[in-house]
Image (cartoon, rainbow, N blue to C red; front, side, top):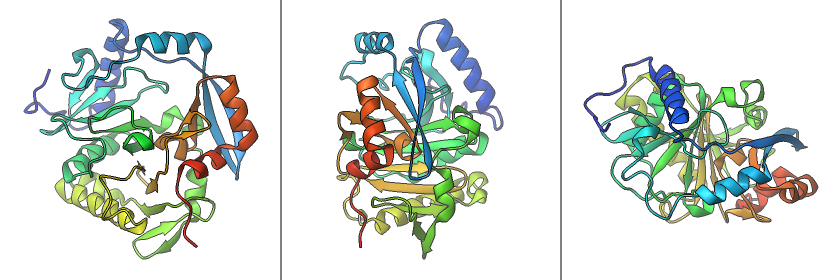
Length: 293
């Protein structure tokens, strides 16, 4: 299945993705985690919260992966396509949202490593064909569950009205040079616009995205520490958002990049009650770093 010389023809990612998903379901390679949806509003955001059912949690724990690298080798039944000589696209074995794609390096790299131009090129290839949210959980404290470097992509169609819950706040960015901040975010972060022409410029677009990513690292003070400090990076066709992390958990609830897009996952009704009481934005603030004065 590993044929980097047979790369995906342009315009075929979605149909290939659907075909491979159907195959993976048929052979039992995907073990989707059933959840019940809830909505919790705070700070003008309708956060989407998914609650894992008790039966699903029991099944998930029984089938949880070992400490080995699930990407070396990867399960051929989860293979979607060769993206580039350096990256493959795989299905998420334990998906919570429909159509969850992993953008994985062929050779092992640490999940804390800086993104490269090759990473950016693979992500842009996917975003050019699928309007979605790409994200990178840099390190365990940012919610990464695997050490092998991988980005992820979820189509916007997986969210209500095909919109990220947090998107409306990104319309109120205050720019300061190449980067900006969102007044409503009570935590340290930096954001920047995504230029649509990066999606179709090959290596030139990847270099531009890489430069933008590095400017975000500088804006939050991670330029000299990236690789040793955890953070979440979110990328859409419209914007990029980078959030340094202080810790993974809020009251036992694991927080990753999807949470900063407005989508959280809780294990049971008790964790849901905590989120209702404290608020999802408060949870994000607690696992991130304090904003600078």
